[in-house]
Image (cartoon, rainbow, N blue to C red; front, side, top):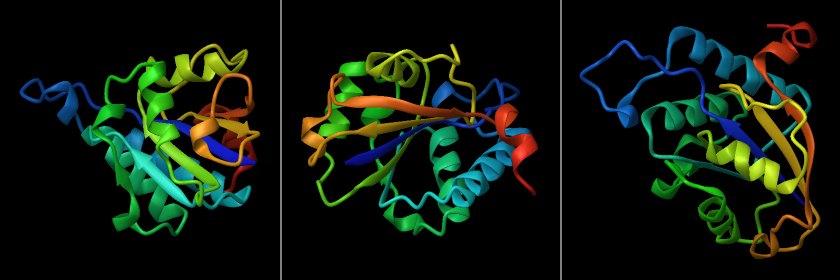
Length: 169
């Protein structure tokens, strides 16, 4: 069995008109939410074997914050340009390329691709993947190359709004 956590990047700023969408930084609230969600995963406890991130500034910053909270080596974050603006098939292909040695994978990226990917695995009851939101999936597979909509299920959804009462900061 494999475990996948789809993490939407934290809240990004819209204040810098000179920056492209790709370059937008996180807001202060975005950084705080990412830290809180990283602490939450640690409290479950979840310790990733691999963190994969989009190359967009807001995504890689979110991935680094999660990595710090989870004591995951920053230099081991795998950067994948294809995650930025990816659709379901692109994301499945990225997952299928992951080596079987990794059992728990955190992937940091963007909507609408992440939400559409989750919906391909089952009913996403939350309706919308919020910034810093985490969709937990269970994959009944031995190798990531086998991942598909039949053997993968949504287990849980966590967002900054749903976990605040359950975590001490």
